[in-house]
Image 1: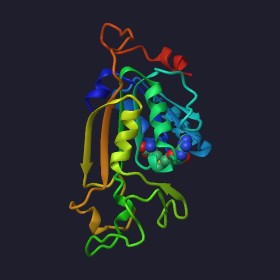
Image 2 (image 1 turned 90 degrees about the vertical axis):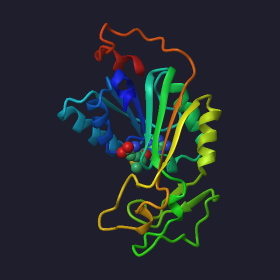
Image 3 (image 1 turned 30 degrees about the horizontal axis):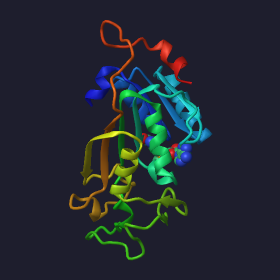
Length: 228
Ligand SMILES: C[S@@+](CC[C@H](N)C(=O)[O-])C[C@H]1O[C@@H](n2cnc3c(N)ncnc32)[C@H](O)[C@@H]1O
């Protein structure tokens, strides 16, 4: 991803187990600050980052209302099962925009809002009769979130939340590949005919104000301290 070549300071919202943070750092992020309200997930991810000497720091906190200073990120990243847990997506998008410096980017890689409608039948894709695209939520009845309430919104509502936060939309892509294939299941709905994930890139208007080093890479050490 070209954005990672500019050594961005990344904030990863709802970072879970944190594997993507290691990948973000390896791909060029000068550092990654990750937010998750799960102490278990954040502690395990911090331990892994320490062992790998990766420039990743984990903050146990709720999203929105992230306890980092405004404009601290060049790139806010989230996805892979994050947005479904957020009741107020408008507040979520506003907090993501607050974290960005002028000219910074928001990148989302997420399950497509149509996904709750697909059955996991292996012979052919079917639409679940008990779900609707325009519902507010549904109860998850599969591994690993069985029994949990997942918030639904249409792709239009997601885009609208991002635009309402003052961000300029640069790209929306719908993809056939799911972001996750549960072990042992090969649903026909994942075989290329239906949308299973989407990507969204948006930008906070304005020009970057941060000084860079002569190489264009920022010094890593100071930035962890400036964010919180
Ligand atoms: C499926 S994981 C996301 C995975 C991660 N983004 C990745 O790329 O691998 C969802 C995470 O969201 C966290 N989460 C859910 N709601 C949250 C909230 N309101 N504030 C902070 N973390 C939240 C959960 O603890 C969980 O670790």
